[in-house]
Length: 232
Image 1 (tube, rainbow, N blue to C red):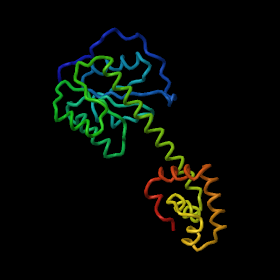
Image 2 (image 1 turned 90 degrees about the horizontal axis):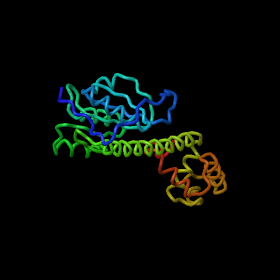
Image 3 (image 1 turned 90 degrees about the vertical axis):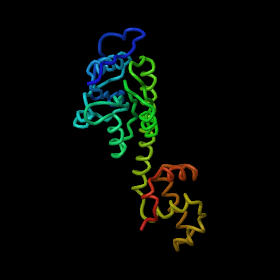
Image 4 (image 1 turned 60 degrees about the horizontal axis):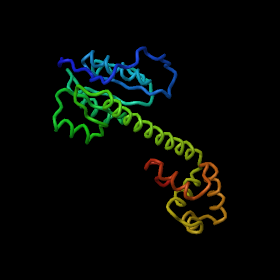
């Protein structure tokens, strides 16, 4: 185990942990992975002092074997640990589609590690001992990124759910409207009347809950590529 490296305190944190409500899904949650128990405890205290819930883990394996609540937040990872490192965990999460923002801490940081971590999307790479404010700034940036990602993912899911209510013909019309085809061109493409196209187009607007063609095009752009294929 590496030498203990505690946080650099400008002033002592507020004492006393806030009440923890496991059902409060909107509360932020920071996950700390560091094999140094003193570092984990110090960071947990700092997070709790500013109203952020925190859970500490002694290894990446311990984190991966724990059922973690799906809440906004970020990860604080030590780079060098026995077994799987913080960089290994970053690669694992990326491979499994987990985009949780990461702040790296290390007592042995070097330029290649920093470049690797930042290229892979890390929020920051901080060297121990780290100032409270520097860590809080990085965590805040990570939480903001996660919130933005969640909002975007929520909007995409909403459009997917609405798209699922369309009939195959409505999807064909939707696709062509989004690609800039005129009603008469869509009618020719699909071998139907222009009046029928207008009816389908109106139904698409209603089901997708859009008021303008511009909104409809933006909704189309949010759909994943597999849904944008020509429906059969």
